[in-house]
Image (cartoon, rainbow, N blue to C red; front, side):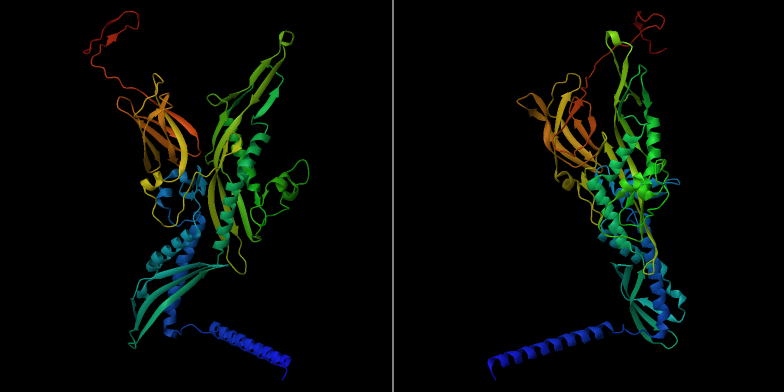
Length: 523
């Protein structure tokens, strides 16, 4: 046989071997997939079905709570005890909806944290749900503790329980064992959660809601921003009326925000006196459709809402006691009759938005509702959405005060001055409080060859931190600061305390204040 024939033979043998291996693996896979689970005797099926149903009911309750409560079944103490961390929903503020972003803090619950909540909820709930006394003909004994595993699948949440039971039949005195139970709740929790998280992360990156809020302020004629009028009559506006107007604008306009790739009616009626009255051809169709993700969610609706009863913190600059006034410019000698009213106002606005995601029912899965909230923050007519801190909720212990205080922060300069003389003072003990954490920042010292006194160091992230100063001979002082940017400078003023050893009280008659007399304590 020549060399070419030998090579051909080896190639044929190799192909046959590869096909044989492939066929072996294929049929092995078919056999493995087709293997039946461990057989359960018919007399035990009612017990298994009973526990499976209980497992499904408890799992569904927990998963429903996750959707209603923004990713939580039970609120951790840092939310339960902090009204600033959640939106109170009427009636009677009974429903708490946690903020996923507020006051510079990103607080999105992680997927593994949500899974751990469902797992613990099922472990506690199944024990309350199961009542073995209903099976009169059996003695059922728990051999070990219940263990639960939760898996997010494409069209449902799969809950598996390892619950070893020893079952004795009283009628024939036989013993059997059951341990494996499972339930599937056909809701797309993972897909809905992923979309909710993408919306939140996109908002933090793009300030979409802040930009729409600024548009509503600047485009409305009843809210003064920058303008002028040729009149000698001074213009005035009141902040409470502006606040009411902005609340109405938010309530009416925010529901028109749509997420590209989700389900919404492009032909929905939209009042439009200047053109077509469909959403797609309206101002909202061009400016309120938000590209968040490249993924498509054809069975999922997303809505944004604001209620007039929810808080809206609004500040205007310049203003005096809630009154905004124009500045008047009058013409020269020959134009004294001519006046211009000029105004330029900037606004700070902070308010909550509720996001509701509804996944419609299909042949593959049931409907599911997921809610969460976040705050919108505008500062001086500009988006203000920096993340000063991130709270990661995954069932771990919170950091200690030492870990928080020694963590990465921003460089802050604090001056310490006497409030009466404006002279710098040293040896002021400085502390910084943020929520439950209190940090000792040290003592103030001479700076710049004695030109000033203070302290400069890195402060931990905090939005509304409390700076306190304490020194002998001075009243304790405190002030709110934000340690969110490098290079911020604050001055804490200390009021001196003077001891008075003796004093005299005199009286002045109201009829003649110039007359001075001794004060009689007995009268």
